Length: 338
Image (tube, rainbow, N blue to C red; front, side):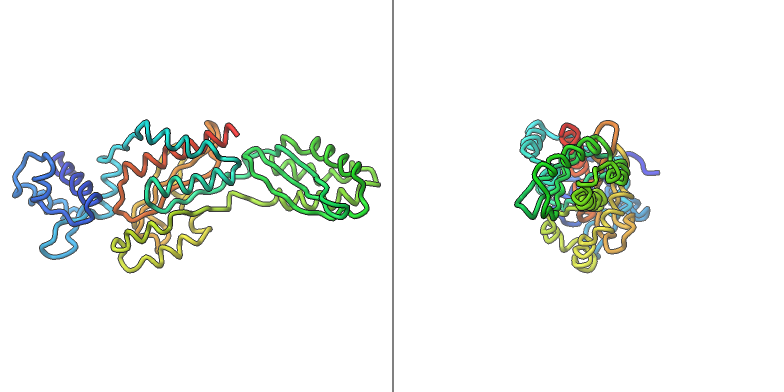
Protein backbone atom coordinates (compact mmCIF):
# COMPACT_ATOMS: atom_id res chain seq x y z
CA UNK A 1 0.00 0.00 0.00
CA UNK A 2 1.23 3.50 -0.84
CA UNK A 3 1.28 6.14 1.86
CA UNK A 4 -0.28 9.58 1.39
CA UNK A 5 2.99 11.21 0.34
CA UNK A 6 3.65 8.74 -2.46
CA UNK A 7 0.05 9.07 -3.59
CA UNK A 8 0.48 12.85 -3.69
CA UNK A 9 3.64 12.46 -5.76
CA UNK A 10 1.89 10.11 -8.17
CA UNK A 11 -0.99 12.58 -8.52
CA UNK A 12 1.50 15.37 -9.21
CA UNK A 13 3.37 13.30 -11.82
CA UNK A 14 0.15 12.50 -13.69
CA UNK A 15 -1.12 16.07 -13.51
CA UNK A 16 2.18 17.44 -14.79
CA UNK A 17 2.60 14.85 -17.53
CA UNK A 18 -0.94 15.32 -18.84
CA UNK A 19 -0.41 19.07 -18.91
CA UNK A 20 3.12 19.30 -20.31
CA UNK A 21 3.47 16.04 -22.30
CA UNK A 22 7.02 15.60 -21.02
CA UNK A 23 8.52 13.08 -18.56
CA UNK A 24 8.49 14.52 -15.05
CA UNK A 25 11.56 14.87 -12.81
CA UNK A 26 11.85 15.33 -9.06
CA UNK A 27 13.04 18.93 -9.41
CA UNK A 28 9.90 19.89 -11.33
CA UNK A 29 7.68 18.30 -8.70
CA UNK A 30 9.38 20.13 -5.83
CA UNK A 31 9.25 23.48 -7.66
CA UNK A 32 5.65 23.31 -8.91
CA UNK A 33 3.81 21.27 -6.28
CA UNK A 34 3.59 21.82 -2.55
CA UNK A 35 5.01 18.48 -1.46
CA UNK A 36 6.92 19.88 1.54
CA UNK A 37 9.77 17.39 1.13
CA UNK A 38 13.26 17.51 -0.35
CA UNK A 39 14.14 16.49 -3.92
CA UNK A 40 16.00 13.49 -2.49
CA UNK A 41 12.86 12.28 -0.73
CA UNK A 42 10.85 12.74 -3.90
CA UNK A 43 13.43 10.73 -5.85
CA UNK A 44 13.23 7.91 -3.30
CA UNK A 45 9.46 7.88 -3.45
CA UNK A 46 9.55 7.91 -7.26
CA UNK A 47 11.84 4.88 -7.14
CA UNK A 48 9.25 3.05 -5.03
CA UNK A 49 6.45 4.08 -7.39
CA UNK A 50 8.49 2.79 -10.31
CA UNK A 51 9.26 -0.48 -8.54
CA UNK A 52 5.52 -0.92 -7.83
CA UNK A 53 4.70 -0.34 -11.51
CA UNK A 54 2.88 2.99 -11.21
CA UNK A 55 5.41 5.03 -13.18
CA UNK A 56 8.20 4.24 -15.61
CA UNK A 57 11.29 5.90 -17.05
CA UNK A 58 11.02 6.01 -20.86
CA UNK A 59 14.69 6.93 -21.38
CA UNK A 60 17.83 6.88 -19.29
CA UNK A 61 18.33 10.17 -17.44
CA UNK A 62 14.76 11.21 -18.33
CA UNK A 63 11.97 11.88 -15.87
CA UNK A 64 9.09 9.51 -15.21
CA UNK A 65 5.74 9.00 -16.89
CA UNK A 66 2.64 7.19 -15.57
CA UNK A 67 1.85 3.60 -16.52
CA UNK A 68 -1.62 2.16 -17.11
CA UNK A 69 -1.51 0.97 -13.49
CA UNK A 70 -0.69 4.49 -12.33
CA UNK A 71 -3.55 5.99 -14.32
CA UNK A 72 -5.90 3.35 -12.92
CA UNK A 73 -5.03 4.25 -9.34
CA UNK A 74 -5.40 7.93 -10.21
CA UNK A 75 -8.88 7.41 -11.66
CA UNK A 76 -10.02 5.16 -8.81
CA UNK A 77 -8.61 7.07 -5.85
CA UNK A 78 -6.84 10.30 -6.68
CA UNK A 79 -8.63 12.19 -9.43
CA UNK A 80 -11.86 13.86 -8.31
CA UNK A 81 -14.21 14.56 -11.21
CA UNK A 82 -14.07 18.26 -12.03
CA UNK A 83 -17.49 19.90 -11.87
CA UNK A 84 -18.45 21.80 -14.99
CA UNK A 85 -18.66 25.56 -14.64
CA UNK A 86 -21.94 27.41 -15.13
CA UNK A 87 -20.60 28.72 -18.44
CA UNK A 88 -19.79 25.18 -19.64
CA UNK A 89 -23.23 23.90 -18.62
CA UNK A 90 -24.97 26.76 -20.43
CA UNK A 91 -22.82 26.15 -23.51
CA UNK A 92 -23.90 22.49 -23.62
CA UNK A 93 -27.57 23.40 -23.15
CA UNK A 94 -27.40 26.04 -25.88
CA UNK A 95 -25.62 23.70 -28.29
CA UNK A 96 -28.15 20.91 -27.79
CA UNK A 97 -31.29 23.05 -27.57
CA UNK A 98 -31.66 23.56 -31.32
CA UNK A 99 -31.73 19.83 -32.15
CA UNK A 100 -34.59 18.91 -34.49
CA UNK A 101 -34.74 15.11 -34.18
CA UNK A 102 -32.76 12.13 -32.94
CA UNK A 103 -30.36 12.23 -35.89
CA UNK A 104 -29.59 15.87 -35.19
CA UNK A 105 -29.18 15.15 -31.47
CA UNK A 106 -26.64 12.40 -32.16
CA UNK A 107 -24.68 14.55 -34.61
CA UNK A 108 -24.61 17.46 -32.16
CA UNK A 109 -23.58 15.17 -29.33
CA UNK A 110 -20.63 13.80 -31.30
CA UNK A 111 -19.45 17.29 -32.26
CA UNK A 112 -19.88 18.56 -28.71
CA UNK A 113 -17.94 15.72 -27.09
CA UNK A 114 -15.12 15.96 -29.62
CA UNK A 115 -14.83 19.72 -29.26
CA UNK A 116 -14.88 19.85 -25.46
CA UNK A 117 -12.61 16.87 -24.76
CA UNK A 118 -10.45 17.21 -27.91
CA UNK A 119 -10.63 13.44 -28.22
CA UNK A 120 -12.50 11.06 -30.52
CA UNK A 121 -16.21 10.99 -29.68
CA UNK A 122 -18.34 7.88 -30.22
CA UNK A 123 -22.11 7.86 -29.75
CA UNK A 124 -24.47 4.93 -30.14
CA UNK A 125 -27.95 5.49 -31.51
CA UNK A 126 -30.80 4.92 -29.03
CA UNK A 127 -31.88 1.31 -28.64
CA UNK A 128 -35.04 0.87 -30.67
CA UNK A 129 -36.59 -1.55 -28.16
CA UNK A 130 -37.12 1.35 -25.77
CA UNK A 131 -39.04 3.42 -28.33
CA UNK A 132 -42.67 3.34 -29.44
CA UNK A 133 -44.41 4.16 -32.68
CA UNK A 134 -45.41 7.82 -32.56
CA UNK A 135 -46.71 8.31 -36.08
CA UNK A 136 -47.47 6.53 -39.36
CA UNK A 137 -48.09 8.37 -42.61
CA UNK A 138 -48.88 7.31 -46.18
CA UNK A 139 -48.46 10.35 -48.42
CA UNK A 140 -49.30 10.33 -52.10
CA UNK A 141 -46.49 11.73 -54.25
CA UNK A 142 -48.09 11.20 -57.66
CA UNK A 143 -50.61 8.75 -59.20
CA UNK A 144 -48.00 5.96 -59.19
CA UNK A 145 -45.96 6.55 -56.02
CA UNK A 146 -46.56 7.17 -52.33
CA UNK A 147 -44.28 7.57 -49.33
CA UNK A 148 -44.69 5.47 -46.18
CA UNK A 149 -43.28 7.27 -43.13
CA UNK A 150 -42.66 5.80 -39.67
CA UNK A 151 -41.84 8.06 -36.70
CA UNK A 152 -40.81 6.72 -33.29
CA UNK A 153 -40.92 8.33 -29.86
CA UNK A 154 -37.22 9.28 -29.95
CA UNK A 155 -37.87 11.38 -33.04
CA UNK A 156 -36.24 8.97 -35.48
CA UNK A 157 -37.88 8.98 -38.92
CA UNK A 158 -37.77 6.22 -41.55
CA UNK A 159 -39.44 6.37 -44.94
CA UNK A 160 -39.91 4.12 -47.96
CA UNK A 161 -41.50 4.77 -51.39
CA UNK A 162 -44.18 2.31 -52.52
CA UNK A 163 -46.09 1.67 -55.75
CA UNK A 164 -49.71 2.83 -55.57
CA UNK A 165 -50.67 2.59 -59.26
CA UNK A 166 -54.43 2.38 -59.59
CA UNK A 167 -55.05 3.19 -55.90
CA UNK A 168 -57.40 6.07 -55.10
CA UNK A 169 -56.60 8.94 -52.73
CA UNK A 170 -59.52 7.89 -50.53
CA UNK A 171 -58.08 4.37 -50.16
CA UNK A 172 -54.69 5.82 -49.22
CA UNK A 173 -56.31 8.06 -46.60
CA UNK A 174 -58.27 5.10 -45.23
CA UNK A 175 -55.08 3.04 -45.01
CA UNK A 176 -53.36 5.85 -43.11
CA UNK A 177 -56.11 5.90 -40.51
CA UNK A 178 -56.17 2.13 -40.09
CA UNK A 179 -52.39 1.98 -39.63
CA UNK A 180 -52.39 4.75 -37.04
CA UNK A 181 -55.08 3.00 -35.05
CA UNK A 182 -53.20 -0.31 -35.22
CA UNK A 183 -49.64 0.85 -34.48
CA UNK A 184 -49.35 4.11 -32.54
CA UNK A 185 -48.15 3.56 -28.98
CA UNK A 186 -46.69 0.11 -29.64
CA UNK A 187 -43.04 -0.80 -29.32
CA UNK A 188 -41.42 -2.21 -32.49
CA UNK A 189 -41.91 -5.84 -31.52
CA UNK A 190 -45.61 -5.42 -30.78
CA UNK A 191 -46.01 -3.26 -33.89
CA UNK A 192 -44.58 -6.05 -36.03
CA UNK A 193 -46.92 -8.53 -34.36
CA UNK A 194 -49.84 -6.21 -35.06
CA UNK A 195 -48.88 -5.89 -38.73
CA UNK A 196 -48.74 -9.67 -39.06
CA UNK A 197 -52.53 -9.81 -38.58
CA UNK A 198 -53.28 -6.35 -40.00
CA UNK A 199 -53.82 -7.57 -43.55
CA UNK A 200 -56.52 -9.98 -42.42
CA UNK A 201 -58.55 -7.06 -41.07
CA UNK A 202 -58.55 -5.18 -44.36
CA UNK A 203 -61.42 -5.30 -46.82
CA UNK A 204 -60.51 -7.18 -50.03
CA UNK A 205 -60.39 -4.03 -52.16
CA UNK A 206 -57.51 -2.57 -50.09
CA UNK A 207 -55.42 -5.74 -49.72
CA UNK A 208 -53.07 -4.83 -52.59
CA UNK A 209 -52.24 -1.45 -51.06
CA UNK A 210 -52.07 -3.02 -47.61
CA UNK A 211 -49.54 -5.60 -48.77
CA UNK A 212 -47.03 -3.08 -50.14
CA UNK A 213 -47.43 -0.69 -47.19
CA UNK A 214 -47.09 -3.43 -44.58
CA UNK A 215 -44.00 -4.77 -46.35
CA UNK A 216 -42.41 -1.33 -46.19
CA UNK A 217 -43.31 -0.90 -42.51
CA UNK A 218 -41.95 -4.31 -41.56
CA UNK A 219 -38.67 -3.44 -43.27
CA UNK A 220 -38.42 -0.19 -41.31
CA UNK A 221 -39.39 -1.74 -37.99
CA UNK A 222 -36.83 -4.47 -38.47
CA UNK A 223 -34.02 -1.92 -38.59
CA UNK A 224 -32.13 -1.61 -35.34
CA UNK A 225 -30.64 1.86 -34.92
CA UNK A 226 -28.87 0.67 -31.76
CA UNK A 227 -26.29 -1.00 -34.01
CA UNK A 228 -25.31 2.37 -35.45
CA UNK A 229 -22.34 4.28 -34.06
CA UNK A 230 -21.43 7.83 -35.04
CA UNK A 231 -17.77 8.84 -34.66
CA UNK A 232 -16.40 12.37 -34.63
CA UNK A 233 -13.15 14.20 -33.96
CA UNK A 234 -10.89 11.50 -35.41
CA UNK A 235 -8.50 14.24 -36.49
CA UNK A 236 -7.83 14.92 -32.80
CA UNK A 237 -5.72 11.76 -32.67
CA UNK A 238 -3.08 13.37 -34.87
CA UNK A 239 -2.22 15.66 -31.96
CA UNK A 240 -1.13 12.62 -29.98
CA UNK A 241 0.75 10.56 -32.56
CA UNK A 242 3.77 10.49 -30.25
CA UNK A 243 1.69 8.74 -27.58
CA UNK A 244 1.14 5.53 -29.55
CA UNK A 245 3.66 2.71 -29.30
CA UNK A 246 3.85 2.08 -33.06
CA UNK A 247 1.60 4.19 -35.27
CA UNK A 248 -1.82 5.71 -35.04
CA UNK A 249 -3.00 3.73 -38.09
CA UNK A 250 -4.29 0.62 -36.19
CA UNK A 251 -6.25 2.91 -33.89
CA UNK A 252 -7.83 4.73 -36.84
CA UNK A 253 -8.74 1.43 -38.46
CA UNK A 254 -10.31 0.15 -35.24
CA UNK A 255 -12.42 3.30 -34.99
CA UNK A 256 -13.96 2.44 -38.36
CA UNK A 257 -15.26 -0.91 -37.07
CA UNK A 258 -18.81 -0.41 -35.82
CA UNK A 259 -18.99 -3.84 -34.22
CA UNK A 260 -15.77 -3.20 -32.28
CA UNK A 261 -17.01 0.15 -31.00
CA UNK A 262 -20.38 -1.29 -29.99
CA UNK A 263 -18.65 -4.02 -28.01
CA UNK A 264 -16.27 -1.58 -26.34
CA UNK A 265 -19.08 0.77 -25.33
CA UNK A 266 -21.21 -2.12 -24.10
CA UNK A 267 -18.39 -3.56 -22.02
CA UNK A 268 -17.41 -0.21 -20.56
CA UNK A 269 -20.81 1.30 -19.80
CA UNK A 270 -22.78 0.73 -16.63
CA UNK A 271 -26.12 2.42 -15.97
CA UNK A 272 -25.78 5.82 -14.36
CA UNK A 273 -21.99 5.72 -14.05
CA UNK A 274 -18.97 6.92 -15.97
CA UNK A 275 -16.60 4.03 -16.66
CA UNK A 276 -12.94 4.26 -17.67
CA UNK A 277 -10.99 1.55 -19.52
CA UNK A 278 -7.27 2.31 -19.59
CA UNK A 279 -4.78 0.92 -22.09
CA UNK A 280 -4.41 -2.83 -21.64
CA UNK A 281 -7.84 -3.03 -20.01
CA UNK A 282 -9.42 -2.63 -23.47
CA UNK A 283 -10.43 -5.96 -24.95
CA UNK A 284 -9.51 -5.03 -28.53
CA UNK A 285 -5.74 -5.15 -29.06
CA UNK A 286 -5.36 -2.20 -31.51
CA UNK A 287 -6.97 0.09 -28.94
CA UNK A 288 -4.75 -0.91 -26.03
CA UNK A 289 -2.71 2.24 -26.44
CA UNK A 290 -5.86 4.28 -25.78
CA UNK A 291 -8.29 4.94 -22.97
CA UNK A 292 -12.08 4.89 -23.23
CA UNK A 293 -14.32 7.01 -21.02
CA UNK A 294 -17.95 5.95 -21.44
CA UNK A 295 -21.41 6.30 -19.98
CA UNK A 296 -24.97 5.30 -20.69
CA UNK A 297 -27.58 7.89 -21.56
CA UNK A 298 -31.34 7.73 -21.30
CA UNK A 299 -34.27 8.62 -19.08
CA UNK A 300 -34.50 8.30 -15.32
CA UNK A 301 -35.81 4.76 -15.67
CA UNK A 302 -34.27 3.44 -18.91
CA UNK A 303 -30.80 3.43 -20.42
CA UNK A 304 -31.20 4.06 -24.14
CA UNK A 305 -27.62 3.55 -25.33
CA UNK A 306 -23.98 4.47 -24.72
CA UNK A 307 -21.57 7.26 -25.56
CA UNK A 308 -17.97 8.08 -24.79
CA UNK A 309 -14.59 9.31 -25.94
CA UNK A 310 -11.42 7.54 -27.01
CA UNK A 311 -7.98 9.09 -26.67
CA UNK A 312 -4.42 8.38 -25.60
CA UNK A 313 -3.90 7.12 -22.06
CA UNK A 314 -2.35 10.51 -21.34
CA UNK A 315 -5.65 12.36 -21.01
CA UNK A 316 -7.19 14.68 -18.45
CA UNK A 317 -9.37 12.04 -16.81
CA UNK A 318 -11.22 14.23 -14.28
CA UNK A 319 -12.26 16.76 -16.94
CA UNK A 320 -13.07 14.10 -19.54
CA UNK A 321 -15.17 12.10 -17.09
CA UNK A 322 -17.08 15.23 -16.08
CA UNK A 323 -17.80 16.11 -19.71
CA UNK A 324 -18.95 12.61 -20.64
CA UNK A 325 -21.21 12.47 -17.58
CA UNK A 326 -22.73 15.90 -18.23
CA UNK A 327 -23.31 15.36 -21.95
CA UNK A 328 -24.88 11.94 -21.29
CA UNK A 329 -27.32 13.53 -18.86
CA UNK A 330 -28.26 16.31 -21.27
CA UNK A 331 -28.76 13.93 -24.18
CA UNK A 332 -30.91 11.62 -22.07
CA UNK A 333 -33.02 14.55 -20.93
CA UNK A 334 -33.54 15.89 -24.46
CA UNK A 335 -34.54 12.49 -25.79
CA UNK A 336 -36.91 11.88 -22.86
CA UNK A 337 -38.57 15.26 -23.31
CA UNK A 338 -38.82 14.75 -27.07
